[in-house]
Length: 142
Image 1 (cartoon, helix red, strand yellow):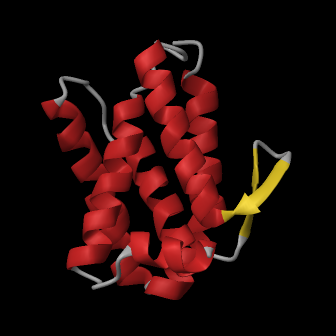
Image 2 (cartoon, helix red, strand yellow; image 1 turned 120 degrees about the vertical axis):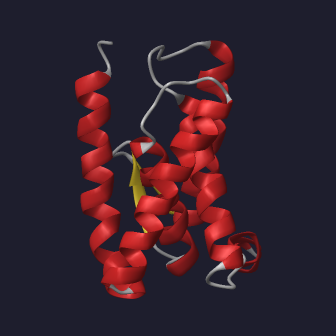
Image 3 (tube, rainbow, N blue to C red; image 1 turned 180 degrees about the vertical axis):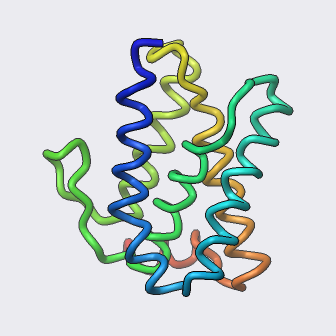
């Protein structure tokens, strides 16, 4: 796919941008468990949807969710142009993934895997960390 190199590049950029802050906030052990759980979980969910992927992009989307949960007032420069609060960015990236998947735009990218990463990350926060990201988002968006 022509998007493969840029897709991997943006995944690594996301890991670089969000990973450092999250590892500091969560601790190295918890961060690694979260990151790998999200990647593996996104890959497994994508397989149930019959999408052959590894789940790395899902792990990055899970990192975005975690960043927005821990730092809901942080600004993210979306597409290097638009500053917005982290929870809003999560919602926009999720909506774009849904749109791209349903429209067939950016073929060769498993957009459902992105959403699977958000879902796995959400349940990880809810069940393991006892934090509800949706409640955090709603509280901060008011």
